[in-house]
Length: 176
Image 1 (cartoon, helix red, strand yellow):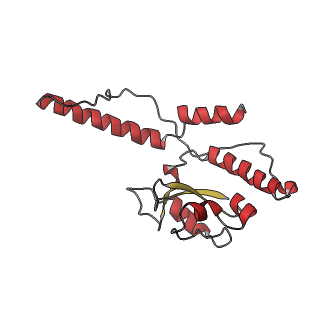
Image 2 (cartoon, rainbow, N blue to C red; image 1 turned 60 degrees about the vertical axis):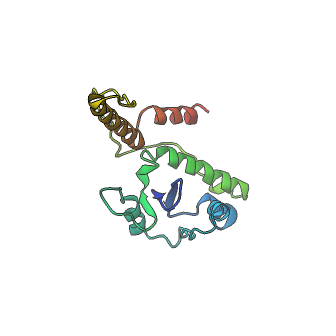
């Protein structure tokens, strides 16, 4: 099992994978080396052996404005709204770690990817995103409309499960 979470106690926020198996860093170093090197003041993350499923579910369901954070975790969808590519990357890193330590027989061959639960939004007309320095009262009203449009674009792009970013990543992954 692999469940995405977002470590929100740092800047920039970081993706965390709740696992029920030994992760690549644990295979290579017996502890999460990336965290230990980059920022030692953070409390170490629990090992996959200590992680409880209900905690992972609670953490990944902590969608801001809907549910409170779960300790240092918020909804994994903030970083991995379409976690398929993260899962494929995890499998690749897992296999490379196994290869590095001489455990090639345990490597996983990816055959099929089934992705469920994502939504494709219909294309609809929107106000033009025109943000500028206002020169009068009516310009101020237009500026507010432009800022709202920009906010909508940023939210849409952060939560999009399909589109250009996903397509570009899939293209790089499957045509390599």
